[in-house]
Image 1 (cartoon, rainbow, N blue to C red):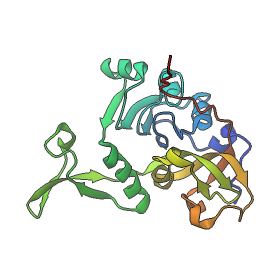
Image 2: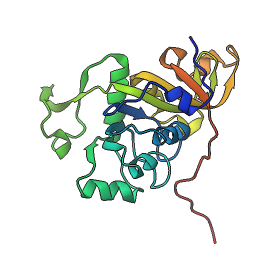
Image 3: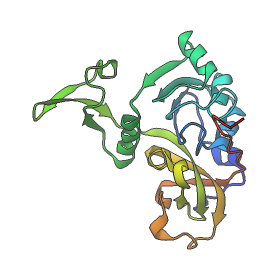
Length: 230
């Protein structure tokens, strides 16, 4: 199976459709698949449901797709740093489903593992629990959260081999491993593609079985919040 594609546009070919659900890796601007996100903006796909910890900043990352009005709903745990996100949400232009951060990660992990749902204490007694099934275990109340299965997963890794095995670097690993598993199709962009066998199998974070397409990207690695001394 061919997994390596020339660029992000080629890798996304025939995977996009209106109203689809896309899971996107990253935390803030760390470890985001920026080339694939920008390539989506170059298409006319719309009404996207995007599952991601947050929505980037106004002019970078998923903020690009908010600016182009291609996202109709975000499933997220943090929505700061993005004025356009706030404007669209408060004006009723964008639907938002809040998730506690650990719950969001576990929903994607569960979807990738074939687990339809799980019970958690997180969110009990808050608006997060509204409309969800409640169940007691050993005298403690839990709520049912559903696993997430996306039509497409987009991740960014440090290195990948020709078969699609991935290694993430330090904190850029963040949500990427669970995002990679929960998509029906997973596309990864990496900083370096190496020959099969060059990666230490004990260090591989995402096995190739989860990765369908792979590109080498050019990455800006923008800093979201820069604090410097005088």
